Length: 360
Image (tube, rainbow, N blue to C red; front, side):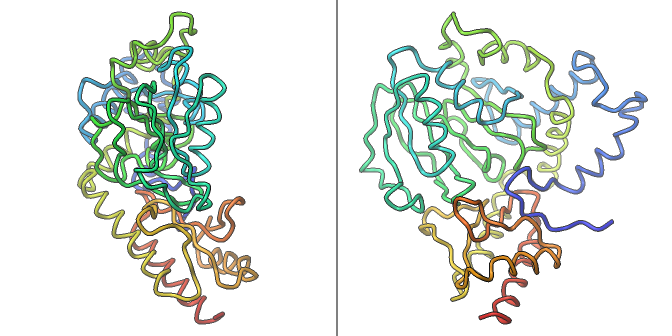
């Protein structure tokens, strides 16, 4: 079997151990004579999978019972709309911090439902930096404060939760969840699309403080209420069972690696290795302010942009795939989520050095 080194931003690489376990389970899961995809989500067997996955996640992230954990559908993008519908009343204001494409999209969707206050906007730096905290214009009466800790496209990351007083902090952690320790108690809600550090596309994780579940207005349809999903064990409708099962395997894989503390150490080491190679070169550059460089998504440009296509072609031939930068940014982007081993990053760094030598 030949596996490439996959730097895709999402859907992203999954741990090989997890894929091999899923392959072994595929035709005959737990002696049932069926795939887990063919088992009723209401069966005792699958309910046990769901409950175990939640318990494992709670242990990994140290999530207290003050928070509900939901395994939902619709991606992070659906939450852009559901959050204001559930957590804010008509006439309320939502604070939003804009640091790139995804936080801008979240604010735009929220603005269809409620009034949005842009607390700060990184547009002046072309979203390569985060405005200084003392320049933010926050509303102390906002229903909640929304931000994206990591911007997958631009590679800007806020490494510590911002202080916003008593206003509930809501974070789109799609590309950072499970990559390092996080104090869940600092947040009102955390949500994440699965397809980067959790599992395959199709599943969305929502962690929400239980008191916030009570905010949903009575006229909101049941299927759109977080409380309905929490009360129903994330089975108000048929859930994405295979994605949920795979997420459970990923949680166990993370635990075997030493847990989130160990993942954090490894991820920082991988990021330092790649940024070190970029900074030591006059051929490559990263546009992001050093204090806000992402551990997960590393964009970089070549001194001679006309070589971009050749760089990608040679990288592909060397087994290094999905390095093309987002169309709105250009250049290259290496996404180095949990499943990317350090050996993969080192292979990229070695290739970059050789390409520079041949083309500088």
